[in-house]
Length: 56
Image (cartoon, rainbow, N blue to C red; front, side, top):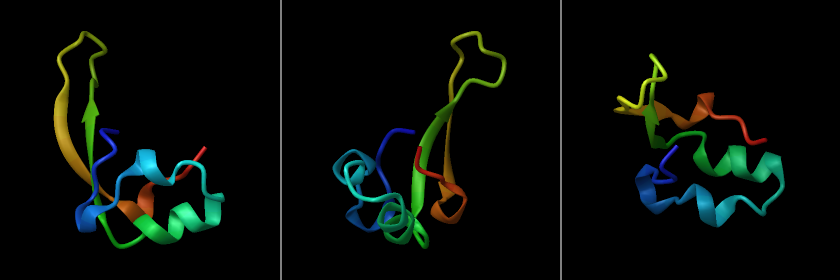
C-alpha cells in the first residue's frame, strides 16, 4: 500500500486509530497499492476499493 486514498485519506495518518474507525474511513474510498506478484522486484501499481482493506 502506498498510503494514498481518494478523498484525501492517507493510511499513514489513520494507523493509530481503532480498527473499526480505520475501516469506516476507507470503506468507500479507492486506495493505491504496489504489488509484486512474481516477487522479483517488478512492481505493478493499481487501486483497490477500501471495503477490501483490513487493518492489522
